[in-house]
Length: 101
Image 1 (cartoon, rainbow, N blue to C red):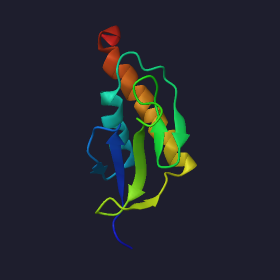
Image 2 (tube, rainbow, N blue to C red):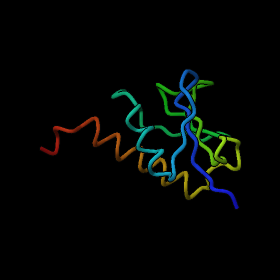
Image 3 (tube, rainbow, N blue to C red):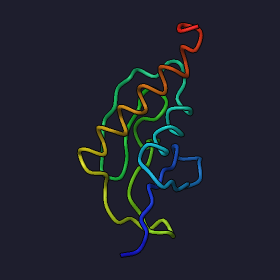
């Protein structure tokens, strides 16, 4: 079996990027979210909606693909849960750095 990667694209205006793991991709997504993110996560085929920044057609693409970015599969339910949890925890730490100092 060929190597698989987690591919993401942060909205309509970004380029596709690939990562070795769901966790690494989630960290990149978390760092792109504004302080005003609602914490809402809505999965759709091939991606996730994270309002208010990534919503409607301007969603975050997230999927398993080959080395060229061709779609292989959506993330599994377990991988989606891990992705959402990592995004939330990293975003919280990123946006509230001073609270734990």
